[in-house]
Image (cartoon, rainbow, N blue to C red; front, side):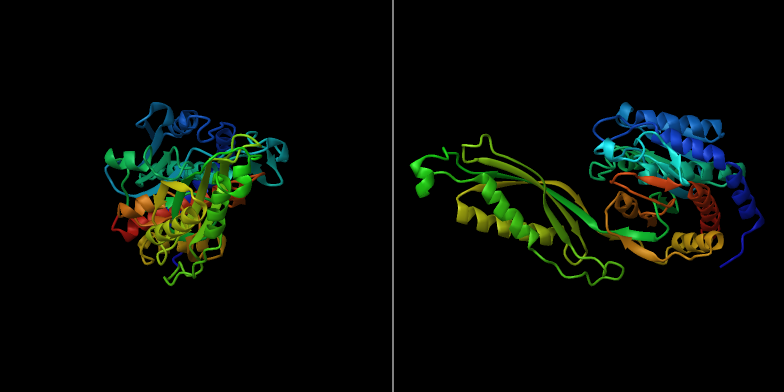
Length: 404
């Protein structure tokens, strides 16, 4: 582990001096609701771009849909390649707001934490990333922050990463997706989602035909049968390095709809199924299992099924010896005293798109906190400046490793 250089020490000092502004900015992000499917992300994009311009950093708002735009922030020479920081501006819903200790859009500070929906997923990471770029810009060190919309709908990247790549606005020698936590995630499991529709036959529940089984086929019970079969499907732990702590898992019936009246045998039922895949048992393997179960249930219960594939993201991993991973581990150890390990993340994210573009990617690293996709989501106040310094110094070391 190399000691901090003079430039790196100055970056750390610059970031520390901006601590209060960083906290204020993080709170402003949390106070701007951006629930996917409810609020357009343009309001958050404008908050980010305004803050960047105040800090003297170039900010561009761009997108396929103006109300669901990206923000691209650049430090140093825009024609030079450097490290890319990534955050998404949309969030999941807060759920029952009465269960939150503090209102989910208040940005309340309590017990050394800032509370709010998106605090660690990923508005806290965006706050740390922007101030890292502001510090880098003072030293003319190239880096880029991209803040993208529509991640929470399934990480397709259609409005964000794919658009930015087409516009040549997404390029770099390594990337960090600014989620929470200080494990260096060098990849993630895959994601597969189905919408299943079952078609049965309706009949009066009081009819002799239903009693004797000569008419009617319950789509709800057939769907229940199918979902139970899927739930009972078990896969082995993966054999690949870093993935070997995970299995492919099927979570059936996360949402179910069916039936029309209490006295009618339901002729339609719809269910959503969430699957997390590993290299050994990928989407193709799961497809085969699903079709096998569907054939068995349809034959036994006299129903038919339609299968719609909603999302299909692969399990991915960057080469573990990519320079960004060592640089990030060295810097984190230098600033925190603890060296983070390498791992693969269980949840999927847009990291796979960056890996597919040939950019070695940390698929999750950022400020400390908890509560993502749950109540009382928070980010630790002190970890914002610490993470910003880690990001900034990592950009310097990555540039040096790549001959910059």
